[in-house]
Image (cartoon, rainbow, N blue to C red; front, side, top):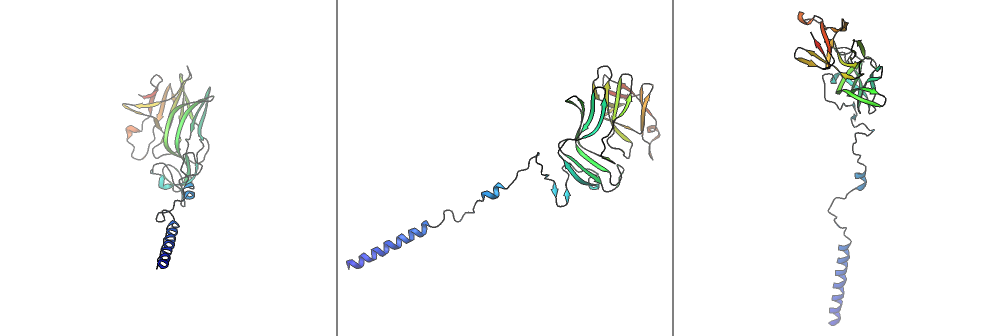
Length: 254
């Protein structure tokens, strides 16, 4: 009887030992999902300085600027993160330049409009107009998300009108519109060489741009011939004479 009990005890111990081995062989946390370190390492965070353009899709390039009235008529071709000179004029001491920002989108017009012909090139960026003297740039004007069209990618010139006390430079990035030409105006003081933007004042209203069809210096005044179209009121067809007020950095209409 003692031998039988001893055998039972040995068998029971062996069974318990096997059960213990089976439990210890079960992997820890077997019901949890595995974590893949390699998959996490392949994720590349977007950086503004990255050379990979995040706007690329199977359908082409998508603009990162807000949608405009021309957006549906533009097909984007390239994106550049290198600033480019888009307009330039030489001064006696330095230059005035229009320079693109960190991102410039270039494309072409796929349908004609009042702003351009089909195939015209499109340019959009956060542009700055600067006065450059040596290695120093003085920002004269900022044009955020500015979009314009030109037949080619040639560097744009500034038009120049000279007065006794200052030289006036006009930049017209958009080569045509449905209501005349629109220019940004800058002055170079002949006495001290100071360079600055000029506002246009007509009555109580001031503007950073000058709307014109033709213009020139007549007897020390800037004479502007306004654009005339169908339905233009007669009072708006007359030439406008502006006096240059350097102290207040304005052209003031008579």
